[in-house]
Image 1 (spheres, rainbow, N blue to C red):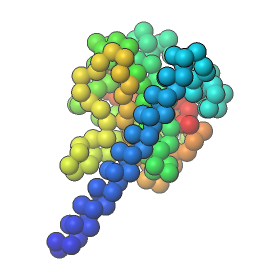
Image 2 (tube, rainbow, N blue to C red):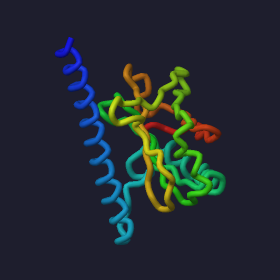
Image 3 (cartoon, rainbow, N blue to C red):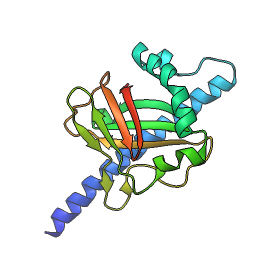
Length: 173
């Protein structure tokens, strides 16, 4: 019985380590892209690395989210070999974005094609795999959704729902 608990604990810690490394690498690439943009060089935006449909979505919807929710959506992408789907955004107005970081709101992601509903997993010692502190202007935030059967793939259209917030038709990179 004790060895089974140790095995379960070890697997959980391994998953947490893999997820943390993916998030750290993602943060490094985001920072590098931002620094290139400040130096006058092109940044890694949706137009340079993502499908054109993702870029069109961002252009047509970004102003809505900035005005109504105080955020700029970076996008949705598959991480951890497709076992997780990451949603990233930057807070522009902390008061408007407060609901997105609310601990009581249970975020989920819906795949438009299959109707599959993915949730944010909760780790035993870590908690939900999302940021839920008070939002701060200019900071980037993330959350990951469990995709155990890899139903959601790059190119899929998804909706992200967090309380009253809903972003429809995002394209997974």
